[in-house]
Image (cartoon, rainbow, N blue to C red; front, side, top):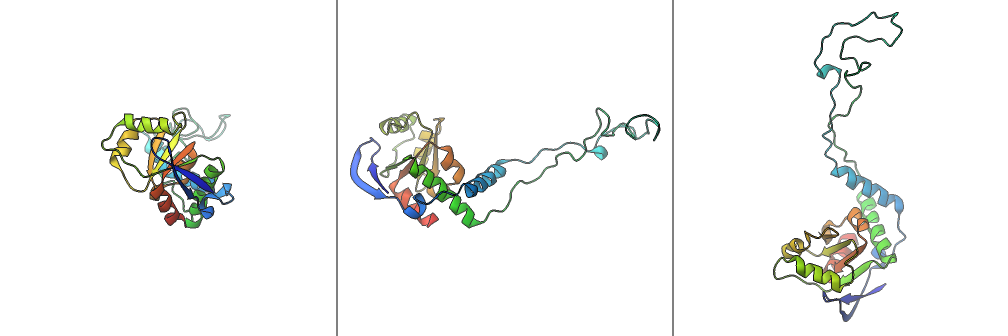
Length: 208
């Protein structure tokens, strides 16, 4: 699949790049995508939830009523989970939600996400660029020139660029990522991918 290379003014440079079929042209695997996104979302969780169990709350340990014959559930002290204001049984405890996912599955998921974007013609290739200073105005001008101002976009750079990152930071529907840190979730979360030429090579190096 060939894509025209544009500049940041939205003009066709006359050059074309070929998207690697083994990355952008595979049959997407929805289950691999599901697992990778599930792991990504799980890793975002703090896991600091906590409720007090019976041994952790204060209250008298005096037995409130008879063991049998009361007509209700058995209960001991005021901390019993049976009573309102009592402890919680098997409540949440701090935990880590991380789970293992094979590298090949993660790679397949990323390729599947990129293939979906290629099928939707939602990939724009631009020549490499940088801003002289961090200016949101310059980034907005570029987005308008590319006619994607109304889209949620992901700009993929070959390496960290502070000026570009700071220029996009205040724009709600724009996100900047480097090619080596590309993940399935942010690819799928964007409506349009704007990829620089060198980023395309970096993506191929990582996923090939």
